[in-house]
Length: 424
Image 1 (cartoon, rainbow, N blue to C red):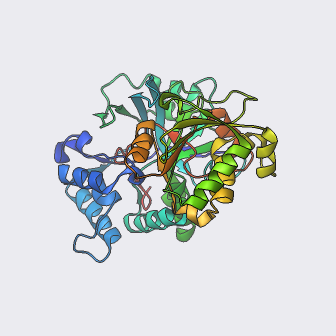
Image 2 (cartoon, helix red, strand yellow):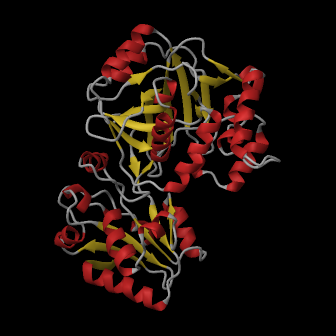
Image 3 (cartoon, rainbow, N blue to C red):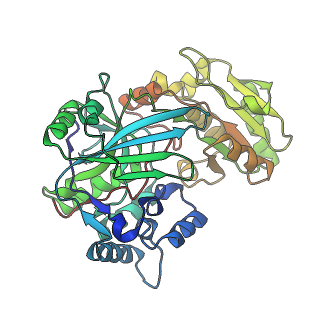
């Protein structure tokens, strides 16, 4: 079972360092160099200075990040909450599908455990590079600088309801980000409300939606330190699976330009295993498949610019290719594309896929179309949005999806709160 606790958070003090809107950033793994530079130039206390440290005259950027965090605390730009609390987060957003939603979550500490039934489950494979980077940063700063995003079941809505009466005052933070998402954050320190929330999650199993690398880093760090203490917990944003604002969007696949032989092998695979039909650009992204429907994938080849829909001919093809996996996994479009096209037709290895050799990703339709149109990608495969129930079923089977199989939007901002790991 998940062990959830309130935290005495480190937080920005806007009276010293200015509006919170200028201090937060998207998670480290979705920021490019230009975005990092713009955020850093916009405010001397922006979180990217410590979460994405650069070598600014120091041989060790991680040590520089730790020293900068200590300086911010000393000058009162970052302060420690006087008492433990939970932090309720509401996110009003327009999704990539054009639908407006509100998603609700709670920032808290969660005890780090091994993956397993009834505890914490992953849903995607991870890569070693980001984990080493995050581990070095955690060792230096001795803090969680950004939260993990995790899901839990709460059909009756008891968790959020336990805090709702305490959200009538103006929030601590009210931020509108560059995507137009409004983030509102309230501190809840009422012991009765905290007890009610913790009780509502007492039997919960957590499914990591975003932040697998950070969670696995937290587990390694906890074992390195040993014993009991604050380092045994990690900062999480907890969202109910039944929350009406929870939605999962696809991440599309981009292939580098292929030589003639590789191009021929891909087409032979597609024509053998799929019904290939011409379609329109607007219909390239498949809708989520209903139970029993065949896998569908959109395909745009830069060599001829003709959009196509690929419909799996026989489910038995997926069953043979993914033998040994659960039924929900064998109906996963990203898994089928990986085994039939990336691995078999193109011969990509796990290392190639991990390090994006010959492969890249696009988080939205326009980005994928643009990449093929301007030659940055040779072709694109357009994936369907995976239902939350399928993500959950695959995790429950103890399986991990291929990287970037899901895109949970909006992201949880970095810099809303920090969780110190060396002090209770």
